[in-house]
Image (cartoon, rainbow, N blue to C red; front, side):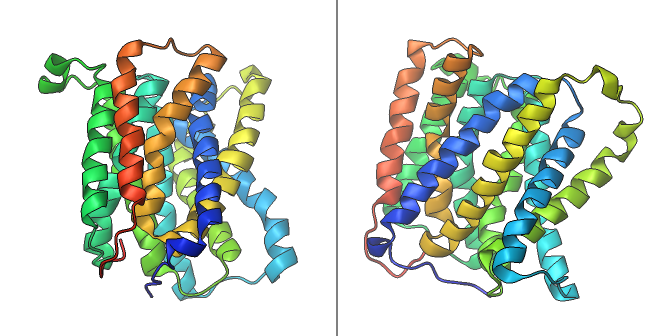
Length: 305
């Protein structure tokens, strides 16, 4: 079942929610960088999803009660959990080998990948201004990743962490279009909860071989605090906002907010002392901000991307 997003003219609050979601999502990069070397990526993400599921359950029960989904619903939730589990595993694995700023910049490739996925999954045609914005935003992301060095760009000097995170971005780009395709009218809280549960299951299967190798007595308390923060703010709240907003303004516009991620990632990384600011990044950041203007322009046509 495909739900057509409503007009943006009465949806200003949705854009405000998306700004909050992107700030929370951006915070997961520096927080993740602080704890990613303490545990395997799959184990960290398993606990993140599992904790988010437990914390979200009381809200679901209070609003909608509790009932196990049907077989048809289960396969839909399981399918939606795959791209999320893949993305977050790739994110934490990549942070072992590349910088927080690089992952934040590469995250801006998601809107372009999402527009492509939305066409193949939902037959959505992206509007001209959004295509221009996607191109500008991608150029800005490449500028940040390669520090404005054309020789690095032409040589495609991406490290292992960058390549892993690009695979994660491709996985994540499938998520928003799949929500529109697979949502069958259930309350968004219910869908979000069961997607978190399915993501926990997939990540548990990835983590099975790692549990016995971990010396739990050596794990720093900051890992548990960081995981708790990620579970509540960068997972539970963010997923609900993204799921809700996708049905309101469409997958491409929701994904376009990802272009702002490097801006917030850089600010947070500087505050936390994880990275040094380089003025050569400014042109790339400016291109990313300009791309947001183009993508959010709502020129009337027959497309709904």
